[in-house]
Image (cartoon, rainbow over all chains, first blue to last red):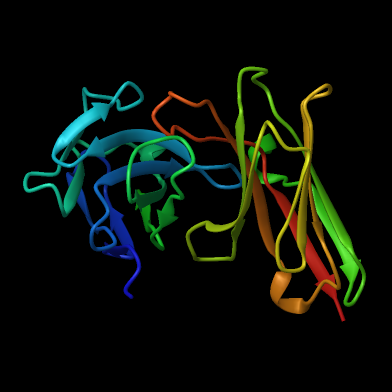
Length: 115
Length: 113
């Protein structure tokens, strides 16, 4: 069974440019998460979806970040405009359901470098 | 100056020895705990989990111990192998909190041949 798929794997952009990341969760997983991971630190949740509904976006910097999961499957995370401090790894994860204890499976991440 | 975040605690062990990785969690209300393994260039991989009504849980070559009194979690890896080299993160969650994981500071495990 395929795991969580993310693309691109790497992205280099100049500051003030837009960038988008794509995630395809494990088939049948209703819950999708986007995390930010800075170098040497653990992942931090940005947003969580239950199907197509964003149920927790409290940590998403809404002035420049946006996300969507229109059909309740694939999801896109966008940054516009990107800043130097956005350089990090953006991880997508999915789980069968959203209850505590549902194992979250992570994709390989997109490594973003903002110059 | 250097960023504190770049300096992960490191544990070096000889191949075949047992490894113990420790984690202090922050929220006394947390009742679900997970250990993840992250290899370079990859996403975190689930290893084992434990709920607060238990103090020990065993998997294949791994054991997680939970001490709620001092808010401490440990991961024991038996007969450590080169493939165990990675960064290990503990994470905590609260039942009813929407499966929101709060990750701790990782520990770099290096297995020496």
